[in-house]
Image (cartoon, rainbow, N blue to C red; front, side, top):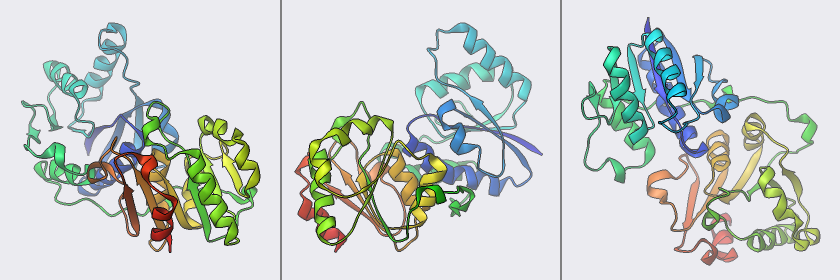
Length: 307
């Protein structure tokens, strides 16, 4: 049985996209023990992948934190991994490779130049994340990216009293990247339009989005407020009950897109701060609306896609 370590840090959206290669690695190495090295905030998502045996936390402290780094190195040495798949492919994980290889023998698939299976293609930074993972794994002998049944993410959402054919609106986005957020007033106008069509949408967001609901204009429209009231599993179940999903380029949007039905219409809004050709959610019926400034996207632009 192979002992395999998969490394993945980063944003929630990137972690969602990395689940595809994680499943592909397991399909290729069916008799294997899988450990994921990731940030603690993703434990409540990744622990539900049915074949993951262990999750090791790495919250990316400063590399000069010798105590933490020594603990990580001792752990790695004791685990005796046969393979390491570096899905983060960062300068940090390249340093991990250099340090780990001093005292351990293993196969490494990543971008470290001296690793056993490097992905050093000149165009790798121009590829969508899924295609980049596909090419990287191919170098390690894994020929395809597995199609995933996201049904492993389950939750009892009966307490939310939701119907079917929901219209979801994802108002959230990175706290540190406001340029990725369509303005609150735009979403209010979208809700007003839906109300005129006798549609009461469901608003999704994290605790950080609660402040946006203090806008007085939200009192003039009808919606179901689930901001700060859902976890990863809840979102997966809500996605299955949705007919339309509209939102910013944000991690929860990735999860909703993956877990929704194929005929659900998914509309993702982009400005110039991120490139949908590199990181857009993947799936059927995914529609990208992008303008240089995200708030140059008009309500009519969204309505045209929805109709």
